[in-house]
Length: 294
Image (tube, rainbow, N blue to C red):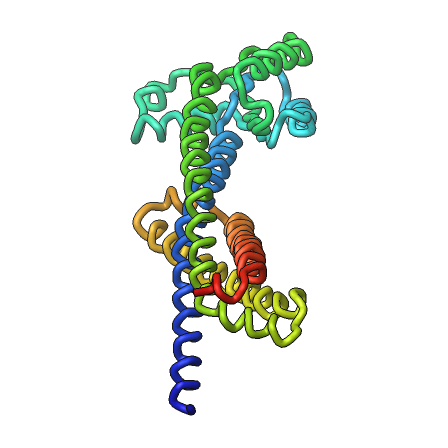
């Protein structure tokens, strides 16, 4: 008798571990896709707010007035930041980008670059139509002082479209994996409860109410969801760490807040799907008569 009980406990532990492993693998794959989609969008937003738009002002405008203009531009709803750049700083940057010394410096040629305010946009305004409207407004506000608004129109026209294609592809893959994940976790839970169908029926026959029978299974499902989600989240974090070791682009695709968002989503999804699958599996076995269990 003791040996049979030991085998029974061992079988339950094996079934529990097998269920956890099955759920972890599904949540791990789902977590990777979720991180990739959210990370790609985060990377896009960072890139958008790093594009510099040069507002070239006439050199007759003094630095005090440009300081006020810089603050005005930084306070506008469509900007994420503004920074004054003198013509000398702009020349040094241009020489550095060319590489080494320049004949311009050697020949004492007058600096052809005007002083400027470097503006970056909020992501909500990063499209060509908005940029054309912003350019028109700035030229009107600083008429006679603002010479040129310099930016690459093709970037505004194509940047969002290119990134959006990757996001849509990621969402499509995520949707397909979500459907597969629900099916696989549901089957895993059903198989685990199938081995306990006689225990469920025995409890029912001795007078236990459906609510009483469900309670321990629901708590077990919550535990499985939380444990599986945390393990899967740790595995996703490990994969991110490995990827960032080989390429820093992956580091730019994520941050601590984004990772915890993915982790919370994995755990929540794990709990919800295990609870739902357990509920429907239990309802089936509670409705069967003793002969139908065989």
